[in-house]
Length: 316
Image (cartoon, rainbow, N blue to C red; front, side):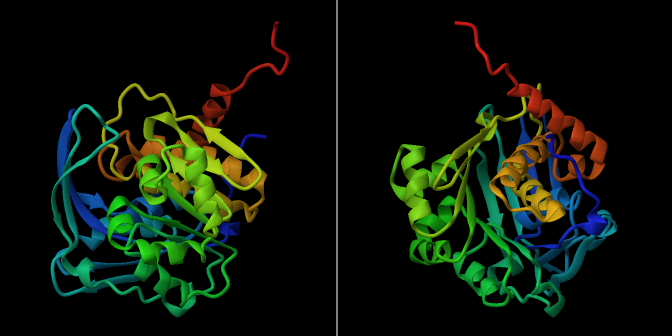
């Protein structure tokens, strides 16, 4: 059965805690200045196609909050987005011919450097929680404020693996799933083999480990099985920024839409996440994610299915 998009009216809410930023990006195909960015923004842009999203983050008084209006119209609750005095989080980066690797030119944390997640009362009972790429100490603080979620997933990056390793290891005891790329998995576990790396992480607490390999697809590991989804073969990748967060938004959004967290549902969610990540890279910022329709998503998921379809009886 091909996963399809459910009505968001019947879906469970998804809580995401992450960054809401302004990005300036240069790729071989062009550049964009001061466009919407941040893990929370990309995740919400993707997940809101499937389920109501509750966004918690912080911006400065210079942030163009009106540009988030399309997200609010799509069911993203911005009650947890604090606007405080100061400058917003800004990132400037460049991609050369290796679009899997960004070169960071400037990072200005601004008010994000003092961010302390305060989960609104009405968000604390969200059954699906995604801890986007922020300090593991803050991710742990979020878990102290939520009430018995059905599924908690987290993301991380090389900076936190290096600077907050003990806190990250502690976090692994409290989440059901972690998503990270292959380089981060190797750095965290000190295993070059991804199967061994996944087993190491599973031993620390999560039930599932999602390892993303950019243009080479994504693996999902658990104790009993391994699942792989290929990347969608795009003719041109315009801007890879936010692809991983868009993947996570599609993954979590699909599970929230169905209310099903079985192994079979999670495999479908990986495919949906891969589809959403492929849309995200087609234009700068979250532009493409705001343009697509449910029909577009279902069509691409069907194309993913065709990518791996083959006859079960092979000629000798």
